[in-house]
Length: 211
Image (cartoon, rainbow, N blue to C red; front, side, top):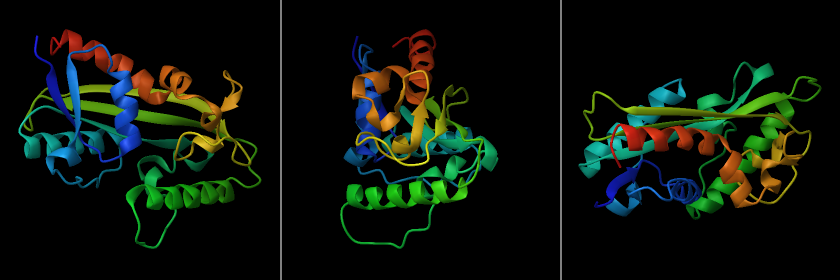
């Protein structure tokens, strides 16, 4: 059976690498939208599922085929679920030159600093990462596949670890006795919010799309 080409509605190289690993074993070829000249979609919505669906439909329309999108972020209980869908740009950072990954590192550092500031003095530091995956066969697909993964933990008072990206250095996972940034890629891909969402998505791809 020929592999299904599935366009990833993201230009995040680390997300592409994670999802490729999580899709291993399926007859699926995951292609980043940037490789096809597809630009980023607008994400105007206030929920993960609405943004993921908008991104998947945008990529499917531009690429003329099946697409998958992940909208993910950090939700902190005592902040009412914030930063939520705004996780990637939680802190205001001036536009700057440089490559995408360099700008992302600056943004990540600012986001983490703002989160620590907002939680200063707070005893309740419970939080969870959320990943919402949406796959569509085509832009007008009336039956998108939807999977949601949640990974609970708590926010540390200072960063720990050098790996991962985003809020990983601040997210402590009690069951593993480490921050997400202290986990190796294999362990993270086995336990993460994306791993939990992808486990559901793999079943849907097999059962509904027969991949």
